[in-house]
Length: 259
Ligand SMILES: [Zn+2]
Image 1: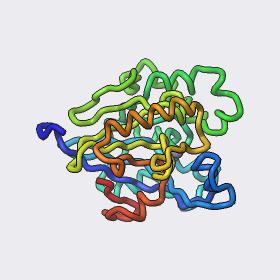
Image 2 (image 1 turned 90 degrees about the vertical axis):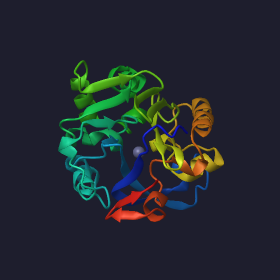
Image 3 (image 1 turned 180 degrees about the vertical axis):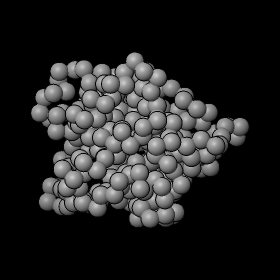
C-alpha cells in the first residue's frame, strides 16, 4: 500500500432481493437439497473527490418483466447516498450479464469501462447467441452497448489497467470470457469489488465457483490472481451475497459500507 495513493470507500447498493435458489446454483455442484438467499447489487466507489459506479443493475421495465422480488430502481437507492445517476461520469461494467448491464440507460452521461474481450464476446460472437449464454444476456443492454462503440462514452479495456490513482481494473475471466473486477485502494488496503467472479463469499473460501461458469480452469487462475492482489481475503467481495447487506454498517436504506 502506498500512502500517497488516494483512499476510497466502497458501498454496496442493494436494488433487489432476497431471491431464493438452490445452493448448487451459487456454489457449483454443492448442496443440491439446500436453499440460499441472494441479493442484487451495484457498487459505489467514492473518495478523493471521485465517484465511480460499478455495474448498472436493472431498469424498471426488465425488473417488471422478470418480476424481481424486492426490486427498487437503482437510481432511487443511489439518491439515498447523495448520488445522482444522471450526473455520473464513470461506470465500470464488470461483465455483460443482464443484471449488470440492463440499467445502462439510467446513467445517461456516463462513460462505460468494459473489457474488450467481454464486449466482443457478448456483442459480436455468434456463440453468445446459443441458449446457455442467451439466458444470461440482455438484448436491450447489448444493443445499447453496441450503439456506444466508437464513441467516447465506451472505453474498451485490454487486460489490467489503472483507470484512476488507486483504482485498477483487473481482467478476471471464468464466470464470463472477459469479466473484470475493480481493485480499490482503501483504508484497510487493497479491496476488490469482484462482482460475479463469485456469487457468494463461500465461492472464494471454498474455491468453488458458481454454476454459471464458462471456464473453470480460467476461474481457478483468476482466483489465485485476485488472492495475490487483495490485502486480505475478507476484502474480496462477491456479487450477490446477502452478507454484504446484513453484516456491514448500514449508511442508508439498502446501502451498506463494505470498507
Ligand atoms: Zn449477477
